[in-house]
Image (cartoon, rainbow, N blue to C red; front, top):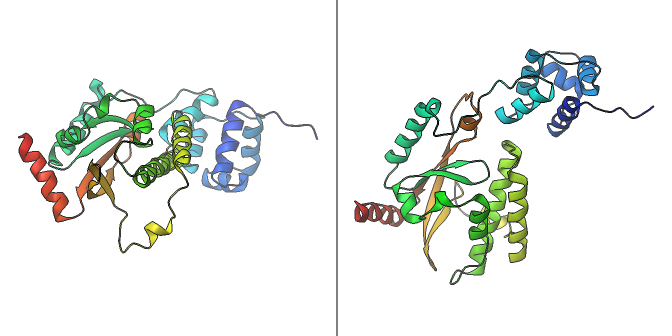
Length: 266
C-alpha cells in the first residue's frame, strides 16, 4: 500500500489524537462522528466543517491557541480572539487582575504568560525582585538556573530543576510555541549543575503541599506556599493563558517578614 500523505489538518489532528492516546474510534465517539469520517479527514479525503472542528477541539481538550491552529489548518477562520492585556477589550480582565494583585498585599503576587513571561507584579513582588517584568524569559531562566555568588550549589540546582518542571508542565498542559526552546535552555543549564535532586527528598517530607522558598540573601530564605489562579471559561487566547501566582507565607516568621516589608515601604 502506498504511503498516505496527510493534509496539514490531518497531520495536526493525528498528532493530537495520538498525543491524547485516542484511537479513531475513541475520537469519533467523543466528537459525535464516525471512525470512517475521522479517517477521511486525517488523510485529506474529506474536509471538515467548522462545527466538527470545534467538537474535535473539545474532544481533544485543546487550548484555545491550539484550537485556532486546528481551525486554520482546516482552512477556516479562528474563532478565539487574542488581545494584548493592555487592549481596551481586556479592561474587565485587567481590572480583576489588578484588584487581585492589590488585595494580596503584603504578600507577593505575579502575573505570568506562557513560558515564564512576567506581565505584572504587585508592590511586594517588585520589591522582592526589582525589574522582573523587564526581563525576557530566557534572561530569567539564565538568572534562576546559573551559579550565583554566595548561593550553595545545591540550592541553585534544586531551583533549576524546579524551573524545568514548571516548563514541562506548561508544555504538556498549555503548549505554546515559545516553550520548547526555553525548556531546552533550562534543561541544559540544570544538567550542567548536576543530576536532579531525588524525588524521595520531597515525598518523604511530612507535608500536605509542596512548598517553596523566597531567597532573601545567601543562606537566608523564608518558606512559602503558592497558589495559581486562572480564568474560568475563557474565550480569548491571552485570557486563557494568563496565570496569576499568589505567594503565601508558610509560617509565622515568613508572615512577619512580608508584613514588615510592606510596612517599611508604605
